[in-house]
Amino acid sequence: MTSRRSLIIAAVVIIAIVLVAVASYFISSTTKENTSAATPTTPSEPTRISDNGFPVSSFRANEGGTKTAADGQTRIGYTASCDDAVRAAVNYVPAESYGAGDWEKREATLETVIADNEDGAEYIDALRSLARDGGTSETELLEPSIFKVVSCESGKTASVAVAQRIKTNAFKLDGRTVPAAVEIRVAEQLMVWENDDWKLDFSGENATYRPETQLLYTQGKKEPSAAREILGDLFTDSDGNPLSRDGWMELAQ
Image 1 (cartoon, rainbow, N blue to C red):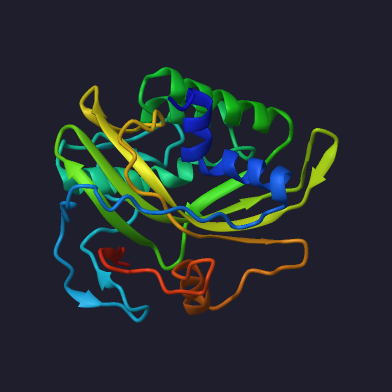
Image 2: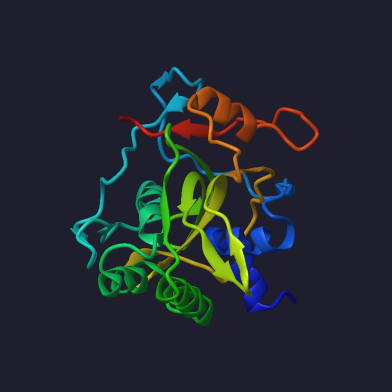
C-alpha cells in the first residue's frame, strides 16, 4: 500500500511543486483518469455557455457556509448537500497558501478545514516548515475559474476537480536554489463530511481522478496572458492530443 507520505505528495499541490522541481526542474507529469469511477452527481444545472466555452454554473466563489474561519476569509459551516461540497472545495483553495500574513491564523484555518487524521496533520506540518524556512506560496482559483464534480454522496464524501494557479517564490532546497514559478494545474479536492461540515481529506482513500497535465512557468518561461491559451494547454496531453472537457463548468461571476 502506498505510504501516507506518498499519498500526501500525490494529493498536495504545493508539495508536488517542490518534488517536481528537484527531480526534473518542472517537467510536466501525465497521469490517467480512472474511468471506472461512478457517474458523478452534478449539483447544478448550467444556464449558459461562457466566452471560454464552458457551461456557467450557479456557484460563485466565496459564497455558502454560515461563518468564516480564523483567517476571516475562508467560508465554513456548510450543509451536507453536494452543492455545499462543491462550494467548500472551491472556497478552501486559497486557504492552502502559506508564507504570507499571520501564520497562526492560517494554521488555525487549515486545522478547521482539513479532516482530523494523521495525513492532514502531516500536510499542515509540511506547510508550517516551508513557511518557517522562508517559502511563500499563493494558491488561488484559475481565472476563469473552472471545476468538475467527479463524484459526490451527500453527507459522506465528494471529489471535485478544481483548476488552480500557484505562485511560489525562489527557495533553497538541499543546497540548491529552486527558481520562482507559476504552476497551473487541476487538483482533486477530496472532501469528507466530518463534525457537521465538509473537510479536505488528504488520506487519498477516495481518490478517483488523476489530472493529465500541469503547466509550469519558470526560468524565463512566462505565463501566457491569454486565458484561452492557458486553457488550451491545460486541456492538451503531453502528446498534443485534446483532453475531454465534458463535465467541466465555470463559476458564475
